[in-house]
Image: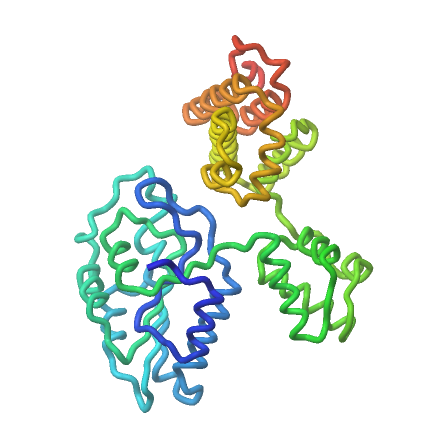
Length: 377
C-alpha cells in the first residue's frame, strides 16, 4: 500500500479512522539501493501525534492509557507487553515507540558494517508476531526515520503498519502551508514575501511556524509585507548540498567555493557533499544521453527524478555542457572519492580543488591528475 501523506493521515484521523499500527518515517528509500539520509518533517509528526491523542484518549485518563518508549532504552518485549494491555476506563490505548533508528543501528550507522542478524536482538520475534495480530484496542505508533530495509523487522513493519511518510517539504509546499497557517490567524502574505521568509528560515516547519507566530503577533491581523519580514526575521536557513550543485551547474566558481566552505564550516560531512555532487553528474549524464535519443521532456524528467519544471531548468544548463566534460567530471569525482577514503590529503581541500575543476572544465586537460598538489595536504 502506498504511504499516506501527513494531510491524508490527518483527514483519516479526523474522520474517526484509527488503525492499530502506524509507522512514521522520513523519506522512504528504495530497498537494497540506498538508505534515507534526510530526517522527517518533525513539526508535522508532532501534529499527527496530537491528532491521535485527541481522537483516542480522554485527557483525564491519559496517564493510564498512554505509554511512551524509547526503543533504544526499553526492550522490545516490554514494548509489546505494554501494547497488549487493555485500556483503563477507555476504549483505546496509545503506545508511542521512538528511536527505532538507534535501536536497530540502521541507516548510515550500519551501511558499511556487518548487519547483526535480527534473531540476535531480544524481543524482535515477539514484535514481529505482534505486528501480525495487533491488540485491537491499542494504537501503536513507531517512529523510524531512516528505515533499513535489509532487516526482517523493517519488512514486518512495512507490511503490518499503516505507513505515513513525513518527508521534508519543498519550498512550494512550505509556501502553501504558510498561507494556510496565516489564513487561520486572519493574516496573509503574497508569494514574494513568503519566498523571502522561507529563504531565511528554510522549509523546517518548526522554525517557520515560530517566525510566522512572531509576524502575526506583530501585525495582529491583515497583510504581512517585506518590511515586517526584514524587521523581525533573522537569517536562519542552512545552505544545502543541492544549492552547491546549482552553483556548480551554473559554473559560478566564486559562489560555489564560498558555499562549499560554508557547508564544511557547518560540519557537513565531506563524503555527503561529494555524494550529492556525484548524483548531480549522474543525472547530467543520463539527461544528456536521453536528449541525444530525442526522449520526451516528461520521460526525461521522470528518469532523472525531478518535477517537469525543475527538469526544464536543469536541462537548460545541461544542454550547454558537452558530454565529454560530464564524463571527465565523473572521473574527477571518483578520483577524489578514492583520495578521501584513502586519507590522501585533507578532505576539505580535495573538495575545493574538485569544485574549482568542475566549475572551470576548460582549464583542465584530459590528462589532469585530479588531485591537489602535495603541499595542500
